[in-house]
Image (cartoon, rainbow, N blue to C red; front, side, top):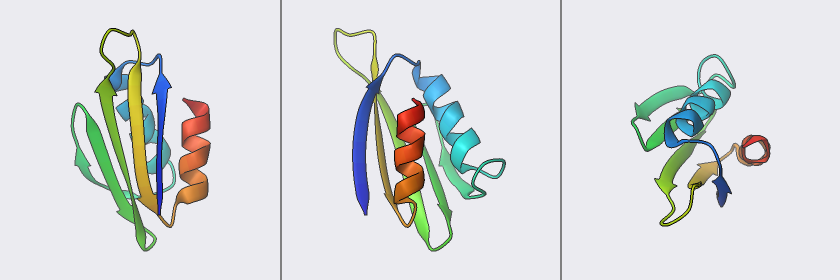
Length: 82
């Protein structure tokens, strides 16, 4: 299992949109089992990916946290693109 976090200049909605595009049906083909303003969860291939976004206090950045199992290399690729 992998837990990773990164700050980004993207807005929260854009980060979630990119996560759905990357991991979801039109990307890696995982099933979107939860999606909201601050998070998205995907399942498939015997594993899962969970993406959470939170605003950092006093900064014009967000913190993107991703947790997953069986999709570690893809998670690292997604985080590198943020």
